[in-house]
Image (tube, rainbow, N blue to C red; front, side, top):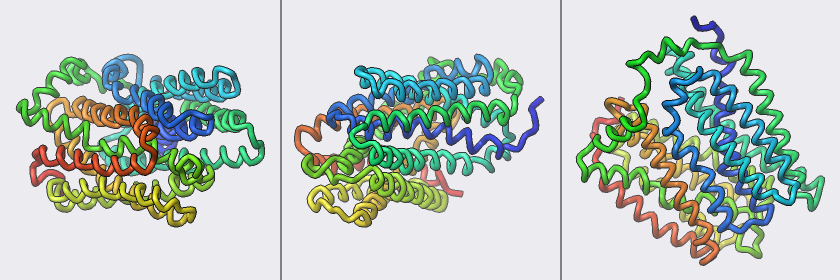
Amino acid sequence: MQQQRNPWWWIPTLYVSEGLPNVIVMTVAVVLYMQMGLTDSQIGLYTSWLGLPWVIKFLWSPFIDICRTKRWWVLTMQVLLGSSLAGVAFTLPTDFWFQGTLFCFFLMAFSSATHDVAADGYYMLALTEHQQAWFVGIRNTFYRVAVIFGNGVLVPVAGLLQDLYPGQTAYTWSLVFFGLAGLFIAIWLYHQYAMPKVEQSEATTADERQPSVAQALISFFRKLPPREMLFALLFLLFYRFPEALLTKMSATFLMRPESEGGLGLSPKAFGLANGTVGLIGLLLGGIVGGWLASRDGLKRWLWPMVCAITLPDIVYVLMSYMMPSNLFFISSCLFIEQFGYGLGFTALTLYMLYFSQGPYKTSHYAICTALSYLGLMLPGMLSGYLKDAVGYRTFFIIVMALCVITFVVAALIKIDPKFGKR
């Protein structure tokens, strides 16, 4: 039997703990390593590698499904997340800070990817179908709250500490990570009480367990005729190609000093412009994209969404030539670009849902997200080398030119005109 407890007790904190490690590894680490003196080539390479666990998490997701309970996995991963955050804090002031923090960030990424699988599985076990539908917006909201907290609070807090302790970058960041470690240990302790124990054995009989990785992969690649399958794979991998190049370098462009070609934003200004205003644009873009697709279907809005995820990137070309210092202007540019990304990303999300229809839809969707994440990781690894070779201005122009790739792969896929409509 399942313990009766209001889901409001644990859903908000569960999805904050799911979103926060991701933004720490993929965004906050970029700012940290930049302030610690790494080049953009090094930042792009190493922080992109940290995304690997999210790419391959589907390989061990069946093991999570049949070994121990989802609640056990969630709580165990939260302990590991707290430990890895403390590890970053301990190693930052040392001589081996780079090797130590990189190892801890990778442990954090692995724990977070595993936590994602377990948390989503627990959500489905602990709630009825009606509750799952009702709380889906709540869980997504608190996941985004974690993202805003990571970008809009953690980076400015590090900046405030740097004002108090000038010249002690490693020490100030270690204080931030000690605080985060304490937060995760507190979440773990709270979830020991708040998360009800669920009888997993009833939900995973021999016939209902997830397929093996081999079964899922074989059925995935047989889903369409070979030619259409190739086009689908190209779309999943390359739809976000320009954004994959841009993601890491946009953060360094905003914060590097003018002598290095950047805008020289302080951590506090970065947190406001990128971590708050930009993310509000991202959320609004996603809401508008979902509404449009539900009204008219994905096929009707595919090309406007393709334009939305590519053309607003021109704001970085504009800023690299104007070199503005007005924070309102910079924030407005980031809002436009992130709103377009949120709107355009809707097309990718819905296409993955469309592609995954039929048998094994959960596993197939996981593979789709892995391929999409791989499409972000590999270009991100090379983005710093390209930027260091040509400079920010030329780099952003190249990104705009490569937007043609998104248009090409979008033209190749087939979508049922009725898909997505109410």
